[in-house]
Amino acid sequence: PCYWTHSELLPVFSCAAVVLGVTTSALGSWVEKVGPRMSGVVGSCFWSAALLTTAAGVETHTLPLVYLGYGVLGGVGWVSMFMYCCSS
Image (cartoon, rainbow, N blue to C red; front, side, top):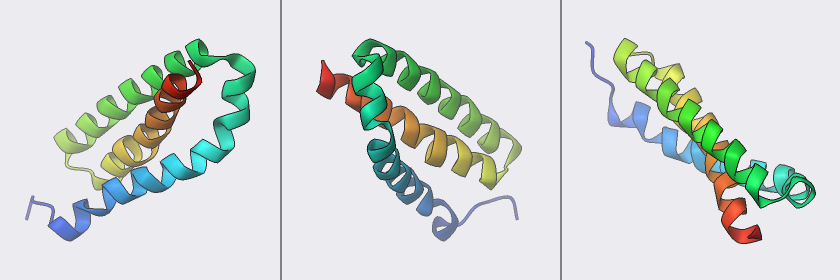
């Protein structure tokens, strides 16, 4: 009763990939304006928040927190740090 099924957990990565794609188009001009260093800092903050939120979701066994943490915040963190590498 306390376990998640594969079908409940597998879409978390897909959610992160979708958020990554949407955020890439939304943040492209922002990264050009603020520069790669700020993009890296923001990406690190989002990724840290993603890990903490995901950990809280796993600890409390709350699936929406896992989706929010890894799927949404993690996707934004990935793209910010990826854009940092590409724009350096």
